Image (cartoon, rainbow, N blue to C red; front, side):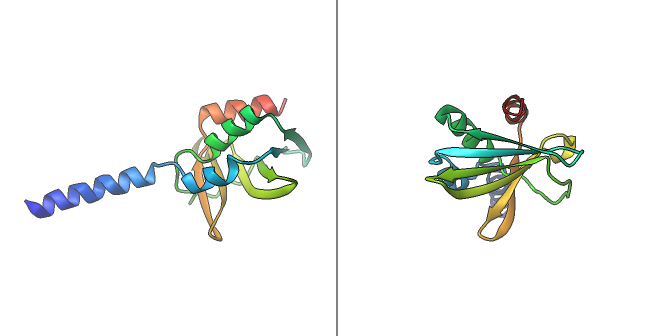
Length: 131
């Protein structure tokens, strides 16, 4: 009986950990003073939007550090977000928002790739900023 309880608790902890926010990433990007969002197009053209509005920056920070996810599927990227603090890049984040099974933000964490979910709300914000 004790083994079953231990197994159940361990499983719960693992599930919660897998679906938690990346607080370390949020702490890095929440203090940014600007961001450059670069949109890649299939025609090999690039569009860039510079964001300085603190409310939008805070929303982006919350979206990119939301629920952690597995990034095993290689889907490519539709764009990138580069967060700045006093003219220095503090975090580079790449995103895919047009492939249903690959909606994610991907970035380096301790030198290794990590990913968070790109939610429908995040997609909507990115699309509106790209117009």
